[in-house]
Image (cartoon, rainbow, N blue to C red; front, side):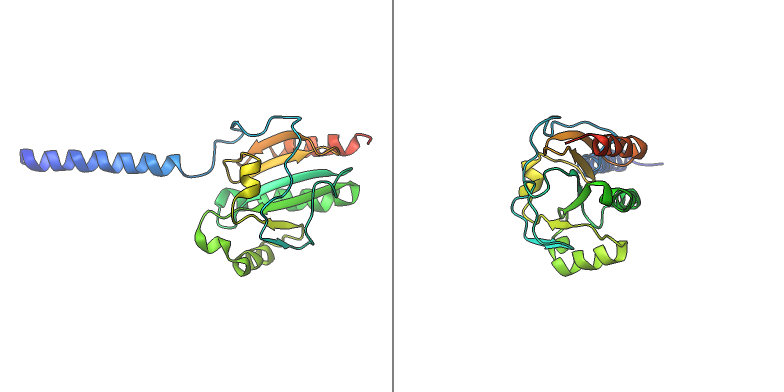
Length: 188
């Protein structure tokens, strides 16, 4: 039989463990699929890529250079499980639609200090077979310009550089691809 002091200690430990678990869950960085956040609104002009420390697989790009193209901006980091799960879809869209006017830009925004190392990012890009441009956003400048809060996050831009669709987390791949197809089909 447990003494009153042991029961009290157990109760306190349980409360602390529950508080720690809820704190970890709150900062996990991935929303429920399709969650909406107060990011930039639809039809808002997309912010340019700012504060990028390194461009990989490409020379530096600006949205002005990409006018006339549909652009998928994918905020990710290479140790994020949800980001890794979306990569086959993002890579497939890049392959299927790049010759039709889609440009995929991966914005690698690190969660942990070791993810800031360019050699680590290059190794991950090679391991995952990513061939599209990747902007290394170590200082969160582009992340903050988009008012982004999650990994992964998709921002789909029309040919005029306006945000027309967002998706946070995994899922809705068919819906995202349909939006890409519809934008590519639009004239101008």
